[in-house]
Image (cartoon, rainbow over all chains, first blue to last red):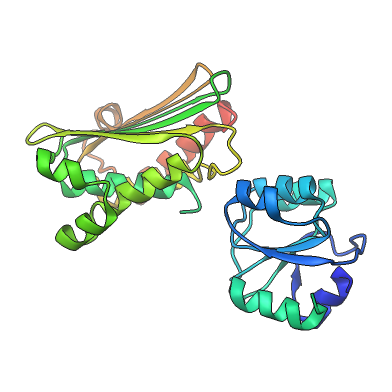
Length: 111
Length: 180
């Protein structure tokens, strides 16, 4: 499943540039301790987290994730969005908590 | 907590509850040493040796003193998580010093957050104590001292909306000059 398809299926808010380069999602990872996520999340994954500081962009870029999915509608600074856009990182948002979001991703993307 | 300023707010509330007349918030960032330290010093009622021993333990302290103490263990966890730690010194009738250190560049270090809003919240909630906020970054210093401020203001109270808004702006500008 592509990121755009997931966003549509789960009715996710696209926080970063709407005209993003679409890509295939291969896996999903849930976690909030950035150093831990960095070593464990897979390439092309959807990363579900409640962290929203600028370092999440660095983690997503380093791991080459498909996108970040912010859970529980957490607030994010404009500065972080700009950084993500400059790095080509897609950030989506949902009001669901991480557990509910992971289930929804599983159901929609069959991963 | 998602921002370190929320920890600062929490610890300062402890100082206020302990009846402190003077509260210092001292932040130091050194890129060369990859180190950030946050100190909160007060001259409040202080803690007994027995209490100090268990103040970092969230289970013991929450049970006996409700909320107080939990803040210390959360602050410590935030510091340990990014290669730092927390020291606390206290003496009954003298005061308490809390010092947390962080690896400045650690990916797990929460951002500092909005110190201008934090100081405004503290001062508007409790304008009685004197506050010294000193922020050093790579040798450059910003300082807000309510003792000096009160000398200039005379009878005008610190918690007047115009004064609070001035303080917020002053901190924002001062920190911007340090690239914070």
